[in-house]
Image (cartoon, rainbow, N blue to C red):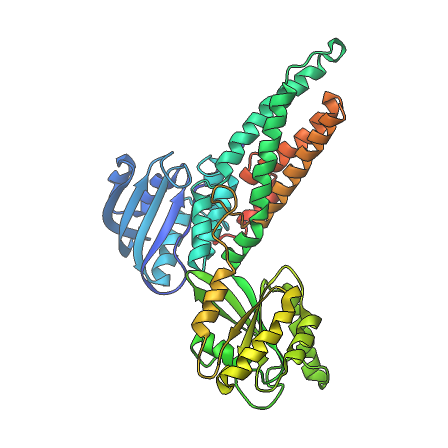
Length: 461
């Protein structure tokens, strides 16, 4: 077999910076580094030691660097590894890579360092995927979810439950060898308890996916309403900057405008949309169609009602047309600063007839930024406390699909036990459940799956 090559790559982002890091990993990592480093004694150096010296290439000094030694298996990849901290000039980084490659290293592929960590048992597959999520995290909530999974998260318990399931599966398989003797090695009662436990864990984790996905990618939040209701003014007020063009001319916003609002570390993907009205020229009509599509895709909808121009009946009519269940609906009663208290109270009283729709009503003034803090507080409430199973949340669609599959397979096993199916029939669905659980942690994986996962990583990770 061809030996695993020693790989190298920059571990820091491209571009000029104060410091850059070049990584080496593989059996010859330290030996190759010694060929280009001024202090050859690093071949005998202890792990986790740092050495100051110069990197040479073709007899010329490239840079003064700090070189850190990691001895296997106590490195990120589990292999012999070296990290070279140099000045952050792209020219210097390139010259160091050229020197390493000329002395036997190969350029790393996307995610190859993390893939080696997985293959060498330093991380399971769900933890490896969490590395990519951690690097890509753009808000505090997404960072917490990724960090929890990197530390083991729910994969540790799933691995333990899978091991118990393997034990029962082996006993049921053993029964097949004694089919004519009608023996039972696997206690059906104990197996049922385990299956119900795994079904419960998988079910709770799968249910947390919508929350986890929102925390990871941001909560899609649509701002909708009739033309000139003040949608763009509200977007600007929420962001506290003039992001959208504001005009008294109806139909100014013809395409969606998307911005991100962070509240308590959670990202809300605000989408300002074209005004909804029945009679519009062609271009505006396309914008309205896109508005309805965005509402369908949203988790939160802020409907902006113009209390100066719209009657309660008109507001109700539009909401009845666009309302769908399964979303958080906030009705922002805009321009209420222009109404007297009596008119406002009468309008709110009439809106009690909207009880068939689950709506939150908030009086605001986008122009004068009144009620904006209350609106942000309502947005905050749309995200429940981080739940899932024992505080764990699933944010990976591959894990979600595997959890659903494992749950369904074990439910089939329980139904089969109720029907007194034979062990060989039960074993089929047990194997399916084992396969699904194994896909999460990487106990079962294919080259295509690994290629697909690690190709999404940056080169130096």
